[in-house]
Image 1 (cartoon, rainbow, N blue to C red):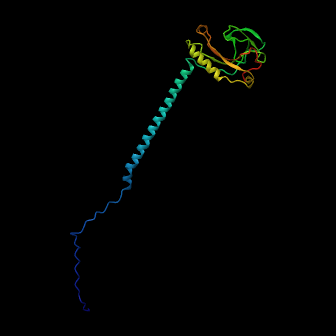
Image 2 (image 1 turned 45 degrees about the horizontal axis):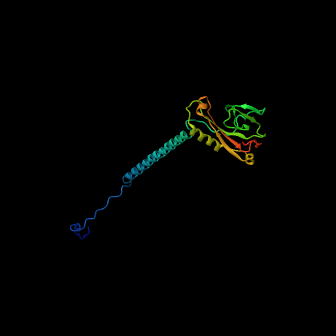
Image 3 (image 1 turned 45 degrees about the vertical axis):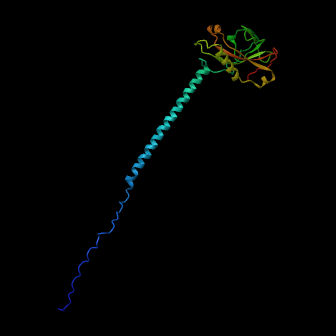
Length: 213
């Protein structure tokens, strides 16, 4: 056997000294999932709160609009209901004309009158293409049941009817005035519920065409 030189195994180097060295804290890795949960919850809460507030605001506006509309309707109707009639349906008093002694309850929208007096108890209805002094151009009817609205309310409703009237181009050929007629407390008690608007001519029976379209 060959002689081999035995060399001693060097000892392990001692551990490096740690005393006196600064200790550096290593931060823990960020936990993305748990860190975002509070933010996600807060965002959902804010969205829910916004939706609830928006619904409340919209609901309030709808209620306010409905309340205002109901109030306006009560004011304009003066205790009555219905619409202003401005188109003859059915058509005005049929032929044969003229018809004398026609009473106000029998007047029809579109009727033309000779020698018209709105306070008269009877009038003569004539064809609108013949000489006449007035024509019934708008009507409002109160319900059959109800208390007397009062003179001021009736006058206001008659004015509303005149403002709603639509006249034909032929009416521009004449100098016409609007004239209103409405029930007295006495005629109201006897069943008169109609408010009328007429166009009239100051010069007598000078109109020879219908004023309505």
